[in-house]
Length: 160
Image 1 (cartoon, one colour):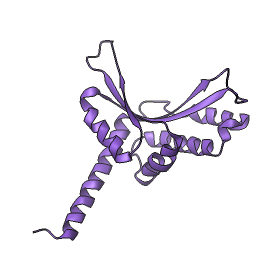
Image 2 (cartoon, rainbow, N blue to C red; image 1 turned 180 degrees about the horizontal axis):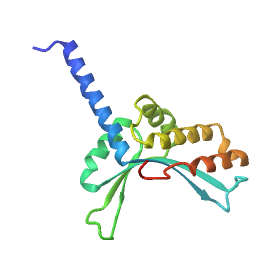
Image 3 (cartoon, rainbow, N blue to C red; image 1 turned 90 degrees about the vertical axis):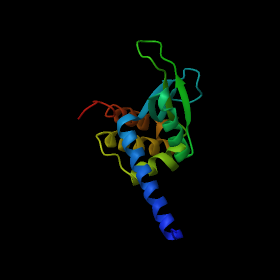
Image 4 (cartoon, rainbow, N blue to C red; image 1 turned 120 degrees about the vertical axis):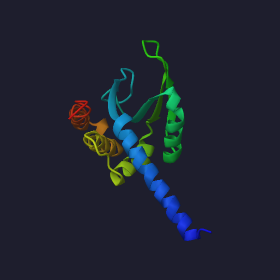
């Protein structure tokens, strides 16, 4: 019969293994991205919306993996991206767009459990931008330009 202490240790090992799997999965299939959208009728002086998001894409057959990751983080949503090209299967996307979820869940997780590939640089820039936005820097011309310059350094090459 296992002691309660041994069961907790087993659960901790399983959790750490799952965390490692998530980090590896995101290293291979995840993306940290920041987009800009113009809003000509916006009441904002600069007319631009800065749109950070964390995305993991998979074919629909891997939906359960994405559901598990969504459950683990406790935020975000799954979206179906239908494809009608030469691919045989539609895509599922796990997406986190809410800035508070990015600040309180996603960014701290990947700071505590760092990515291993060149994607870690994209994440570092992404985290800086989201934190700048939390301070309202994206609402100022100088801050918006700085964010634009930072975004240009993200996702520049597939392999480094």
